[in-house]
Length: 347
Image (cartoon, rainbow, N blue to C red; front, side, top):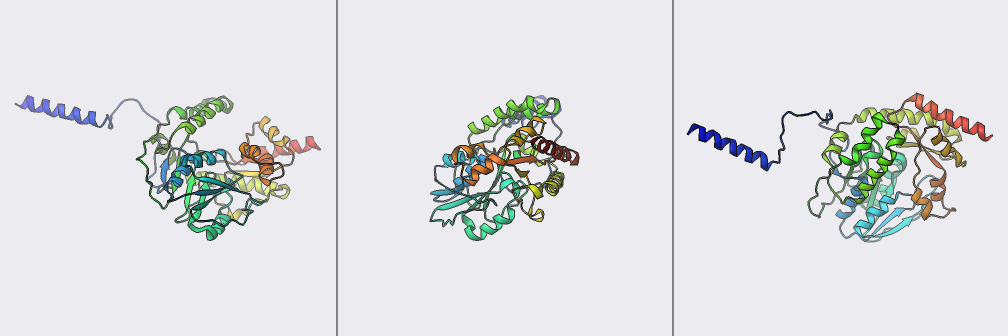
């Protein structure tokens, strides 16, 4: 009887483990040593599988959404996210300060999306919030450290700021009325992040492009366990400190001759890059040839705007100098030396 009782208990235990799909495993090989914090940046947000899906999630919660105003100067994925929701799109222009250049009066069921360009526009966003109130949607894809305004719909894309392959975060005062979201799996698309440890960045570049492509093809899901673990283990205080130090150093040297006047430093929460305006389009290619990889924000804009538009000019001439947490003053000095070399060659 004792043997039978133990046998039944063992069978019941195996049944329980099977039902949980081996959710609790003890022993075996080690995984990455990640240490998620109890509290971390935006821990009260809604975690989805990418920045574009964060925008899609927000839009799907808006009751009776008919039309969304967006800037011409924005990323193509914003348009893709809106198209998935199916609302109408109206576009507005910006001025040289990246402010809204039109007198927009929102009608019933119309909303306006504004981009926090390069993480530098927080003060301006608070100004336009007074104007548009609850009809404002903030695209903080480039501004991970900017706090959401209470009651304002907001979307983030962490992979633009830290080393994760995917993931998005959003805030909305409205409930999501769709079906429960499946959890994403991002192991395969994270491979290029590991490659960066052992190989030059050029070797993993194609892998990163392929990874980005898989995100485009995914439906809206919850953020993967891997991405959430990496994100919540990040040292956000260090990241913010390094970015601000690097940004301030470049700004002190370059601001006098920078034709784009960046906002006052005390109004900057945490920048994505340092935006340098150069009329010589050769500077960007020269920087890349010297190992300073600068992104273009955004090639899509050049195709959709005319040469006489400010948006076209910004996409063509604004150079995004890297100031992220991987680097310090030595790297900033190197960037400045490359710019100085280029200017001497051009003289």
